[in-house]
Image 1 (cartoon, rainbow, N blue to C red):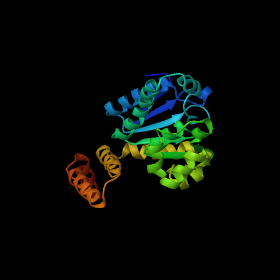
Image 2 (image 1 turned 60 degrees about the vertical axis):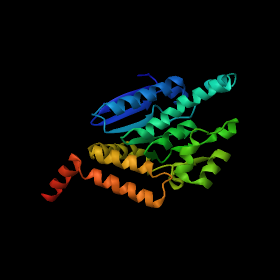
Image 3 (image 1 turned 120 degrees about the vertical axis):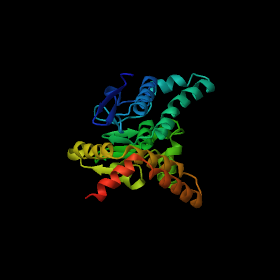
Image 4 (image 1 turned 135 degrees about the horizontal axis):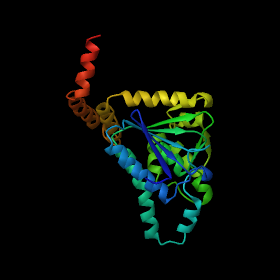
Length: 252
């Protein structure tokens, strides 16, 4: 595991901490490798029920490492494409992981760092957190994360954020659909821990079905979505978790 991403597993929660606080947790190649290794562990370890992603120090993540990006300007297009695909694999793997991923955002989540937060299934933000995609101000494009951004916020807000690079506070980000819940700074850790504990205590199979169906609905016609729901409904009734939970409820 890369020292860029520190991993701790406790009570069903895998906490992955981006660990470059002196660089505001900027994403470089070792960070990408660390994130992919963390996702491998999260998928294979049956003790892991939920993943929490956070940043060390004062910020969640300021985006891609600018020194690496500047060096890439001298590379051929194909070399840059392979580097971009390496980072893109993180987002694909996050979506495929059959366990919920929760971003715990303090401070700044910008550019690719905002993309990492957006790729999570839940985003919990301290009230002082900031979100945005300022790539355009650096002559760059939030190209990889634009698919996530557009599906999360809708066309008008996504284009506004990508084309202007404006920064949102936590409340504005929640209004735009980028954030699930906002907590006071002083209460953030306790509230976030409560959410993680609740998820870790939930049925693993039910959460896996929920996540899979949720994202498979993207682009489906209404009728196809309903049929998919019927299929998931039918299979979920046969799981041990369902039987145990229903019997326990009926005994009350």
